[in-house]
Image (cartoon, rainbow, N blue to C red):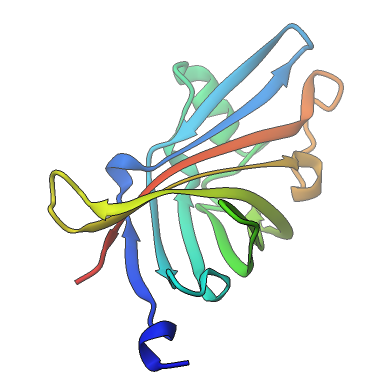
Length: 176
């Protein structure tokens, strides 16, 4: 292999066009959706050898949004995510397994000070010039499910479902 086939492009997540959305069951009556507004991260993308790619991301726990100020304060508070003591949610990939048009990205997710291995089902949507910045950009969709109890967030066990579905829509812009 030549050096060119092993070259990675470095991208930075575009926080204005990256969304991390979660869904959790509430009382068995409805699902509650929320997201985080403050997201940053870095991606090293090997287009010809995607298995060598990597991603790391940081979400500011206190940037939680759920269209309800009281719920946002409560969930970011000490009984749930405890944003004051655990200001960051982080993900650092450890392995990328291409599966054709998609990939399984394994990595370490840290929430509430607890790190667990998770897998993301990811799809590269497109690599092209971003129409606004004119820079090379890559768009991705990814999803996973985690059990909040695995991260020490076990309040209201009988009322709020343990499974948290996570959907990620990300735009990464080539770094200069």
